[in-house]
Amino acid sequence: MIVSSPYAAALDRIPVREFSHDILGSQTHYWQYGDASAATTIVMVHGFRGDHHGLEPVVAALGDAPGTPRLRMISPDLPGFGASEPLVGIRHDIEGYGRWLRAFVARLEIGGRLVILGHSFGSIVVSAALAEQSIAADDTALRPERVVLVNPIAAPALQGPRGILTRLAVFYYWLGARLPERLGFAVLRNKLVVRIMSVAMAKTRDKALRRWIHNQHDRYFSAFSDRDVVLEAFQASVSNDVSEFAARIGQKTLLIAAEKDDITPVAAQEKLLTLFPDATLHVIAAVGHLIHYEVPAEAARLIAAFLAEGEPA
Image (cartoon, rainbow, N blue to C red; front, side):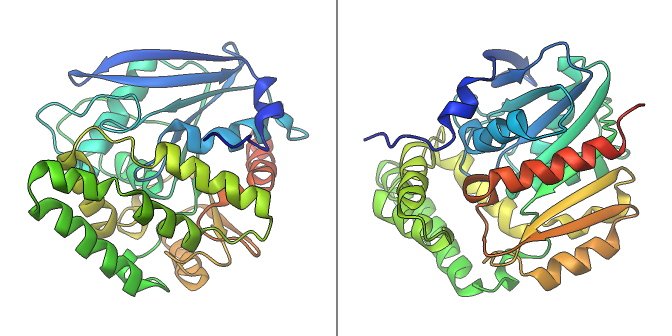
């Protein structure tokens, strides 16, 4: 069943095209939204187990946000998720995804102003790609003018407000790894587990919006290519956080956090802010780890204002 998106009308007004490129030996599929000739390009990196669909509400809201400059928005599926093939000979960990992101952006040959946005797990990928490039073996430089991190993972997930749920998730993925491959794959795609996760993370009281969020997770949260990919990425998601890399990110950075985020509390976000050389923190009230689904217009407003600060006169 497909539940109608509350953001469909706004998204329909934005031109979109799908592309794919060979990146490090496998095909990365990505979607380009907006004005292809725009002076500003935002490359968006989605979270764990998701795909580009998750950030489409933010794309739609940026298209409608007052004062937003003309934008070209590029949203890839991470390797091994959605339509993108797994990495070849490279683990799906933070180092591997950081290497992929640098190669992907280099392949796009973006002219003009570049902004990199990461949501949740994507915030770790973006941060690592920027911080580790000086010591990376590859020769692809990632030089955005600005960085936006939405629901950033500011501290180890096991230390979050619901650390017990993270431990249960660790057991769930451990079980998926230990079972015979076919059965383990089925467990990792279990619809009941996906729904429990969705119910726990959604904070909105709007019944129609909650129904749509659950439908999004039902449709896209299990679109990973194989068991190894999701297990490697999960281990990366609970073993790393943005605080490891913040001090080495020199770009002006916008942190958009949530008051009721079950993965990273506000206190950890405030501590993370102090680690960046040049960052601003905004905390959105009454929302959790699904800023991109529940309040994309508020996120877009903050992003638009952040971009306008550095827009050439």
